[in-house]
Amino acid sequence: MLSKLLAGTVLLCAMPVLAQKQQVSEARTGSVIGTLTCADTNAPARFAVVTLERVPAEKDEAVKAAPPPKDGEFSMNATATTDLEGHFVLDKVPAGMYFVIGILSGYMGPFAHFDHDDVMAMSEATRKEMLQRIPVVHVEAGQTAQVELRLEHASELSGTVLYDDGSPAIHLRVRLLRKTKTGELASMDGIVIPGFGAQVETDDRGRFRFIGIPPGEYAISAAMRLEKTAFAGLLGGKGLSIDVWGDSGGEVKVYSGSKFRMKEAKTTKVGEGEQIGGLDITIPLAGLHRVQGTLTAKHDGHPLSHGRVSLLFDDDETEAQSTEIDREGNFEFPYVPEGRYRLRASDAEDVELIQKHEFNSNFTEEKPLKKYGQAEMPLLVQGDVSGLELATPDLTETKASPQ
Image (cartoon, rainbow, N blue to C red):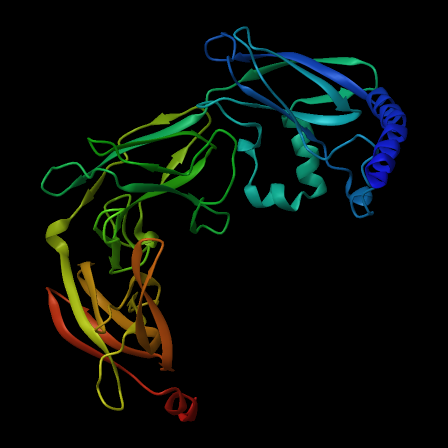
């Protein structure tokens, strides 16, 4: 009882101090009000998101240790949503200089003009260019700043993915690839650009559409997943059995221009506000072949129960596909275009399979017994290929072999 009384006394004593700190903190804040308009329609940008991002310090100041936030101030950004008239209000914004960022689907974000790597590095030249291109607001303590912002309609790319028999490729993952400064194509997965997505899925007619993309030069890829999954049983009965086999998360990709290699993909240049269609892909099923084989131990020929087999292009050894072997050592690539390849085995090992039942589900756990070294072999695909044997050496043999 005494401890509770003491805790209550401490809390009551602390409340005036906390209230005083809050008043001091609010005295160092201001407000931002404004309106967002769509430049192409002159209509209000309704239900758009407005964010204030602090302008980074100059380079010579940025290297110094950042001071800790003052009482009542947080490092989070101020964010609001516009109403039906495009108006927004942001209260209690800490004093400082901010970029004003408007986000609305289909409209160009403020960072669209900048290379992602440049923004992350934030050189002084990039900082100065951002100050010229992105609206800035100065927030002063006890004052209200006003902002008028117009959103420009962004670029978009669209197309269709079909199989060579004319049927639509439904529910395929389509990714956007952007040409870098070095001239190579790179995935935009993981690059966060407000209002923009670098990955979509085809609809019931095989159509896809990327909206809000920054200006640049692009290619696309459509992916057919290799993983197979089966469910059996009923919850509440004898348990749910889950079986997953084939490649774990792997894909067969076809690139714009209906090419199977990224370096051969057809690219398209997109300017500000451009709407470009006709980026169609045809998946040539007639030119795809099945490759099957078994991963074995070299010393006695027994099939291994765990490992991964990769299919590499022969000329530059870039990966075309990869898959995990099944429990009998078998591997399969169901969709391989004609060409010269190399098969490479990795993570090969013998494992013991332990059956378990937990939480009304049956599953198999693998206990490693023996590991094996890497192995590879050349492969020419001109039709279906079966009966391959990829033999992996013991690790001791691998270590003893000459470099």
